[in-house]
Amino acid sequence: MRKLSTLLSAIILIGILASSCRIFNPSVMLRAKKNFPYTMGADTVPEDHTIQPGDILAFRLYSNQGFKIIDLTSIGEANRIQANQNARNTFTYLVEPDSSVNLPIIGRVKIAGMNLVVAEEFLEEKYSNYYNDPFVVLEVRNRRIVVFPGQGGDARVIDITNEYVTIIEALAMAGGLSEGGKAHRIKVLRGSLDNPTIYKLDLSTTQGLAEANMYYVKANDIIYVEPSYFAGRQILQTTSQVLSLVSSSILTYFLILQLQNSATP
Image (spheres, rainbow, N blue to C red):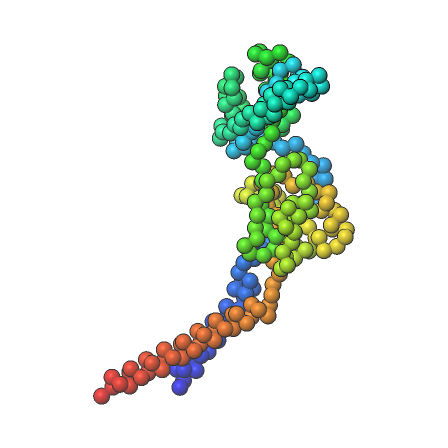
């Protein structure tokens, strides 16, 4: 009987240790220490995207400063068909790991580190040797962010199509906060994952909502809404697991005793 008491005590101790926050709420990601130094505020002025390796660039080239794009005299059906065909003939090019992109005629040129405006001017200068007043249009086709709206299974990867997508808009594109998401605990991770800049937002108040609406997302941002901690449900689940372990251990203990007794002459 003493052995049984010892066994039960050990099981209860295991149950107590298992009832930590990490066991109760194992789906919570990106935990931070209590006094973690979050970066205060974000840039309220959107910055032009800086081209980087891995970007897929849509590239279009026109002569005469793009005169055909806005030629108001070319209103015939044939010209409209030609304009539509030109729009469909936009080709995409990968910015390679060495920061270069391989473009028609001029070959490989390094443009990573430039923003789109500077890159367009740079390429127009390169193509000026072959075209009269070239006009270059660049667009990054694979800019995206990741949004965790506050509940497991609802994470989304969202394509960013312009420079002026706010955090509020990004959350709306992801379907809004999940029912279990904490509006007052939203984190934005930006930059290298080895040492990211982390912002903390509170959307539970009108002031926090107004501030967040001034912040613009950048490519590869991670927006994480911390999920709620449903203590009652988690405690019930953990208690059920502990009781199951206790009953299984007791059954095993008595089975071992029975086998030992039957083996004793």
